[in-house]
Image (tube, rainbow, N blue to C red; front, top):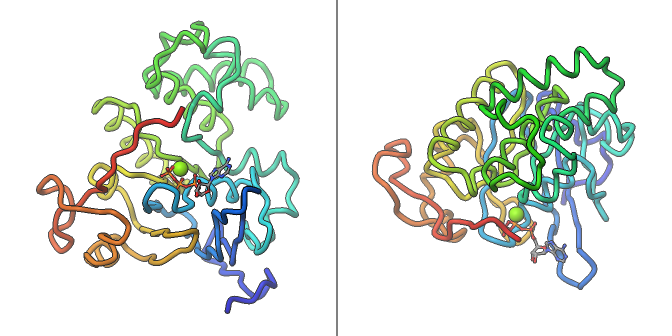
Length: 273
Ligand SMILES: Nc1ncnc2c1ncn2[C@@H]1O[C@H](COP(=O)(O)OP(=O)(O)OP(=O)(O)O)[C@@H](O)[C@H]1O
Ligand SMILES: [Mg+2]
C-alpha cells in the first residue's frame, strides 16, 4: 500500500509524480483507481493503455485541471495543489485530446498570444515569440486566420503553439497525432525531440506506438485506472502478454526495437467529438 503522505514519496529525480490517485467522474465509474507513477525530469514518456484506461484523466491531474479525490500529485518535490494556478499553467502545458476544447482566440495569433500576455509579457516580446513559434510549427501563414476556419490538423498545431508560447517545463500531450497527416506527425515528433533535448519533459498519451516509440525514453502502461507497467521502452514493450492485455497487436515491420517485435495498438483512435 502506498502511503498518502506526499513528503514520504518525493523522488528528487522526478519532475512530476502521481501518488495513489483516485478519481471518479460522478456517474459511479472510477477513472483512476490508485494510479501511481513518476515522470523523470527531462524524460520523454509515452502513456499507453486501451480506450477508457484513464490516460486523459491522469494527464488532467498532472496540470491540476482535475484535483485528485484521493492521492497526490507532486511537482518538483511539492504537492501540485500548493502552487498558484498561474504558475502551474505556465510551467505545465497541456495539449488537449480535442483542440476544439483548447482554442478560443479570435485569430491564430490572438489565441497563441493569450497565454504570454496573461503572464504580463510586453507586446513586442509577445509578438516576436508568437511569430517564431508559428514559424517553427509551419503555420505562420495562418496567423490572421480565424480559429474556427482551420482544419482539424491546423487546430492541433495552433494548440501546440499555445502551449509552447508559455515556455513550459513540462509538455503534456493527449494523443497529439490523431488527425495529423504523416508530415504533421513527423514535424511534431521532430519538434518534440528538439524541445526534449533542451531539457523539456514530454509526457504523451498515444495510440500511435509505432510512430512514437523511437522518441520515448520511458513507457507507462495504464489499465483500469492503474499503472500496470513502467520502464524503458525496450523492457516494457518486450512483454507481449502485457501488450496484448492492453490491446496491442503485431503491426508494421521495423518500427520498434528488434527485441520488442513489431507492435502497435489495435484500435487507432479517431479524434473524439
Ligand atoms: N467527462 C466524463 N464523464 C464521465 N466519465 C468520464 C468522463 N471522461 C472520462 N470518463 C470515464 O473515465 C474513464 C477513463 O477515461 P479517460 O478519458 O481518462 O480514458 P483514456 O485512456 O484517455 O481513453 P481514450 O483512449 O478513449 O482517450 C472511462 O471509463 C471514461 O468513460
Ligand atoms: Mg483519452
